Image (spheres, rainbow over the protein chains, first blue to last red):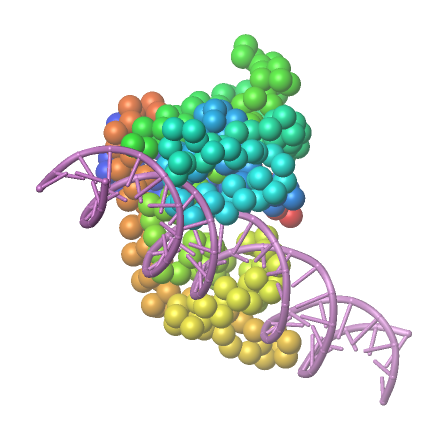
Amino acid sequence: MKGTGATATAEELTEQAARLRLAVNRMARRLRQEAPTEIGPASIAALATIERSGPLTPSELARIERIRRPTATRVLARLTEAGLVTRTADPEDGRCAIVQITPAGRRTLKGLRRRKTAYLARTMRELPDDDVATLARAAEILERVLEEGRE
Amino acid sequence: MKGTGATATAEELTEQAARLRLAVNRMARRLRQEAPTEIGPASIAALATIERSGPLTPSELARIERIRRPTATRVLARLTEAGLVTRTADPEDGRCAIVQITPAGRRTLKGLRRRKTAYLARTMRELPDDDVATLARAAEILERVLEEGRE
DNA sequence: CGAGGTCGTTAGCTAGGATAATTAGCGAGT
DNA sequence: ACTCGCTAATTATCCTAGCTAACGACCTCG
């Protein structure tokens, strides 16, 4: 295992970044395939954000999800259509809508999480403990990086 | 196999899988945004596969990339259009086309890799060494898992 | 030769990203 | 108090990229 354990050179870093990028891309695609949903992964991600970050406006959703507002509009239209979120007018600012998750949304999210995680959990169950731990820590690092990268 | 110290419970495993899934999805999205290409990440992935796995037929490409043949057809149409691959008739089977990467394709891939990896490398440069090492190992693990999952 | 299977393509659907342009509402400056 | 500029949200349109269904071309085998 080269490059681990000592400070990586710029070249090694680039190499590692390239591998990570490929692995992430392919895994994302695989996950999409392994966990077919009726409502689309991006919409699910948005719904999860709405659950986690409380009632928010479409613009806030767009900022958090790093998508454009029109995309948020469309995603929200589907979620609303499906009864997973509600939109109410902001009493303080007539331009804003306030989006909230519904009980049905929470239920959907819960069931989805269970199903969508099954493939990965199944895969991880077959890995040695070290690897599982590594992946878990990698997830944390990625979370942190993703969080920092947003301003 | 398992059973060393920090063995995760089923619940923990599920939790970890869920976090990894989210992190992978978000990172993939971020990478797509950070590395805008004129030709689309899936097409690039296909081109990389064509480079790596030598001359192949559209069906083989579809199998390796885990996409359907019509999708492969479209991707190949764009790559051919862009002069990055060539298609020749299979002399032994009139139904098959044989797809090969062109020098321009290799060049494109090379330049793209450099550009597309920049964001991750930049990000990783700011991480402590052990985080970089963790991510590198995670990439290896994911590669292995992805490789195993295909038959 | 004909039947059935495979390869590649075409047509049409959906999701999810983007931009550009429009509408509505807020707030500050004169 | 009105207008101007900014922001919020939507609408319309375009793109990539997955899918299925259906089709013609071709191979294989009885």
